Image (cartoon, rainbow, N blue to C red; front, side, top):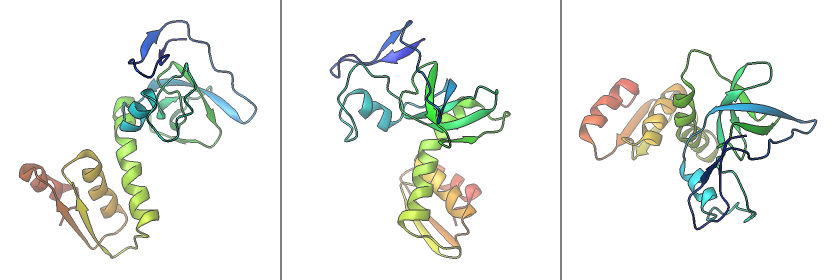
Length: 176
């Protein structure tokens, strides 16, 4: 199987053509990966600095992605080792995705979207009708937070950021 492999945390991952195929257990599925994001989490895994790193080498970095289940359904999944052609994913650790969305776009937007959604829904215990202040709204996670706050029913979304042009454009996404 083709994969980006880390054999030394002091070096960048290297392409390998014959990395061993993962073998799913009973409660897992083998997903054919079509896209995976190079997120900060994936980078810190690849250099061994993430707090959840086991330090075990070799390893395939990547923590999430888009792929096809054995039945052909497209899903966004969360699982380590997504910088490979195939990854084993625990059942229930994926969500169905529409076929008409580009895999690369889904992979790139899910990390910032999930971080914004979790922060509002679970960390801040946001309730419909509340006001929201979003710092760094002109970045990718910030602009996703504006859209998520709108969908969660914020009465007012105050967007703060350094890019004045982008701030103006955020009004179309829900910033008030």
